[in-house]
Image: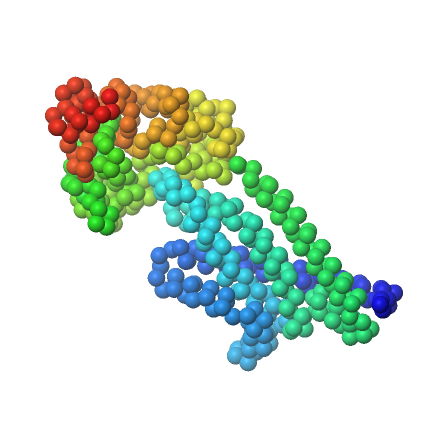
Length: 219
Length: 240
């Protein structure tokens, strides 16, 4: 076996710098994807014909094509189509937001429909307008139902964010690639990258458990 | 106060209400009874438009609520409804269950809403439960909170849809006591119930429904001692 961690030590801070980018892409995409996904879910359960159809078609397209294709498409085709020179970070966040919103919207839709029908009736009987009812009564209960699924989506997104290395964005994986190129060793940089991802996922899982416990206060 | 004029309601092929007309006066307490599937709950749910009648009209204080242009939200704020399964908001404390609608829908200030809510909780005997979540309450307590939640909106009419049917027997009384107290305050009430003794004692009139039709509309004494229709006789024999 040919292992030499001494050589890689000077490069470790460089790989660690990728954490910032990985986290930035993941968190921005999760938050924006959640907002956009909620809107899509509300459109899907409303009975507003054309918009409803658009939301369903949107979801179908984003779930039906590879994420790496979507990323490549956004990054390389945007300048060609619009003339706007999209940055790597913008392309990454945009793609992951649009993509995760498609998945999250289905999860939220399921969560909303699982809320007891009596809750809708009680809200209506009190004269609570539709928008308020959805935001204050139905969504909070629906989201509580799907919290574990949302955490899984966040974890999946964190790992999938490694795809941004394909457009050269300096995340953990891309920095490991760079180190590999500099020292001609594969095992050590990728091992470090792998450990970083794993620790981040464990951290997210722990946060999720804490949040879930807090939300179950009312049980 | 409520004028129901020849309403029908169909769910697809199923005709649940087949032409019902009646009136409920201000301060009147009306018990709606009948076998299951007779349309009692549907009739009640038409009164706050949780179900929209297929034909016919309903007017409240002369305002036709079945008019497609009617402001449904405002009308519902004047009509409280209590459900068989309570339907408290599980993610809010008891106090917030009571104050949510007055603050967010009626625009009442938080301090005023909380003052009113606490008065009502005292009235239903649950002052000590203001800060707890509904999951900590017994069925009877939940139903009393649900009644208070409706009352805090200061409705003119209260609808009760089998309010004690989901309760353990020993909790029925505490809910009926609260309802009795409410009846004495002059509240207009329509109650779908299987509690015959309660109906006889508290109501001013009995509406007996069978097969989507109003078979009897009589004072309770007359109904229970001397029912006119054959169906009512059969029904009473079974339930007593």
